[in-house]
Image 1 (cartoon, rainbow, N blue to C red):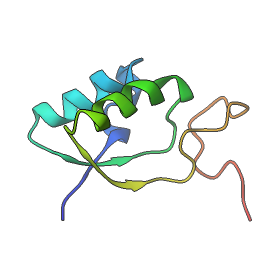
Image 2: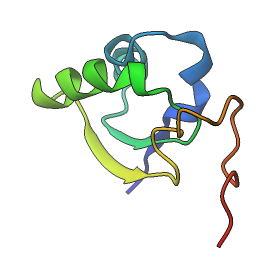
Image 3: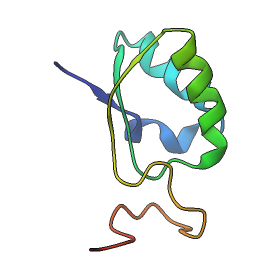
Image 4: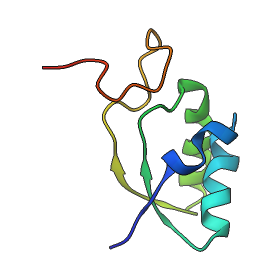
Length: 79
């Protein structure tokens, strides 16, 4: 299975639904939800998912980014 990462267009959108729709318009329906996503995009992503326009193929650690992390930092917390 091929999946498209939301990392590609995350920074261009403030609304999660429009972010997902842009990827779907390219012909991809399997989407990986990438790190660096703000919590504000979750309602739109959820709406797009409930509409059935995409399948979530994976969730990148951390998703969404913790509110205290101010930059796109996938390794903000290390174990």
